[in-house]
Image (tube, rainbow, N blue to C red; front, side, top):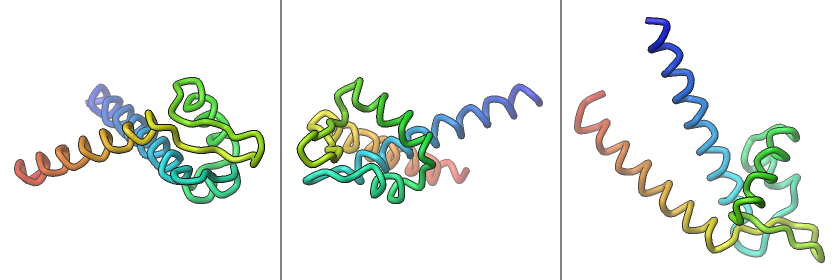
Length: 100
């Protein structure tokens, strides 16, 4: 039983991470956004935001624009949003079909 609770908790952590990443990338679409606006849009603490921004920049999903001091979602980041949205839709359809 404890093992299943652990898996459930880990699944929720992973799901939360995907949601955080999606929210950040979604917030920074278009011309880009400041850290503060992204933080409020994504419902993240300052520390959570900084950790995620570093990871997203390292993986070329987000870029920092020095001139405007904003973050902007890259083309790779936009593709990530499309893929994760498609995955969520398929997952939700599967859950509905299984009546879970």
